[in-house]
View 1: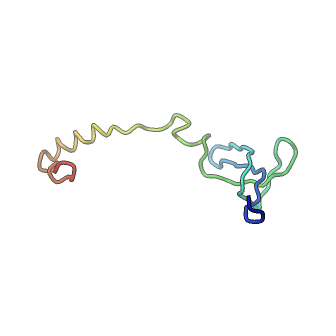
View 2 (view 1 turned 120 degrees about the vertical axis):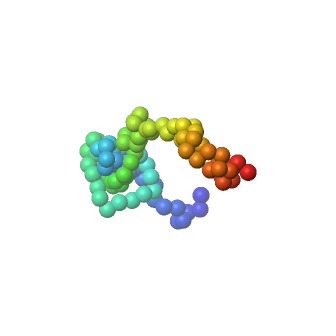
Length: 90
């Protein structure tokens, strides 16, 4: 690696504001805010909106959309005239 062109890489705490979950990892991100971690040391902390602790996909709260039902409902409502206007039907 070329010296002097890479950002500093060190320990940083990422804290999920929505879930109250935090984890310590290494990153090039920096912050003016700090937090005292479980090991007694102080680390910079970066607040994030969503992490795996609060994201609907990872928590099992994700909704599955019924796209096939939507297409059928559209075709019932508008019939062949509505379907002919769509680019896929041409």
